[in-house]
Image (cartoon, rainbow, N blue to C red; front, side, top):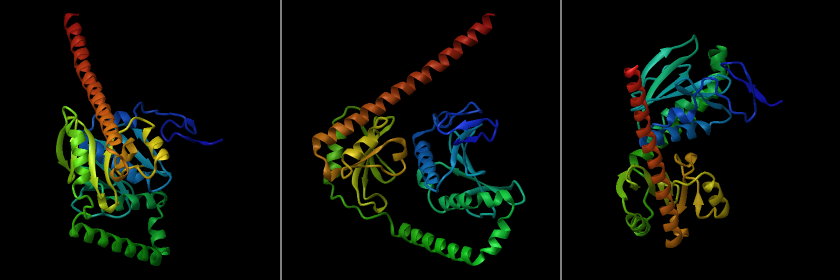
Length: 314
């Protein structure tokens, strides 16, 4: 029978069955994140999920990423994401705020992330390293494994260093070359500006359009050299997959925000009428989320106030 035993309460959980013995969820822990922190969280989660098979679950005040054992976890805070990474060696870098030994073989590296652009090498390389060595560290045989595979590991480290050097060189050269001559941006800008309440700002180096509280459209011109001249927009649950299946040359899953259901729209393959429909629906969707969030925030203090007044009368 397929399933797993909960690490905390030892209850057997069938495959696909929802279970949360700590009475919390990933959604609850990330619900109140700011726009920047939410984008950073989604990029962090998507990056880690790409390493391979693992469990991602909420526990207490943290979200855990585990193979047989946890290799890193995230504590969402009001102003930052606290990322705690378990490694078998000490990393000395500006991103690492503190290193503590938690066992004979493990050291926890505490990193603070405030923006999605911080979820990149070398931080993502440390996460991958933690994923790859976590089982060995938990058995206490990390040193033995390093000795018996020294040549192989040395070659792997050399390859990783070479890749990191190439990435640094690319960053030094600057961002990927722009492919749009202004025509596609102007199309997006005209449609967005025709929607009352739209605010345009530069965010992460690209024109971005707000409701004004939430992002509803992000222009992306050859983002990190992906070849797309596109706009990224949020979509209702299930819409992303349906659009990509229907027209894979026009729609695609964008990085970072794709995990949240956003859709990338290839601007050269869509006419103005279709583009306008997609963008206006994105605006409507994010406006509805803002209204729902505002109602929730206003209702909670009111209930607390009433409870306080009743307690004083009694």
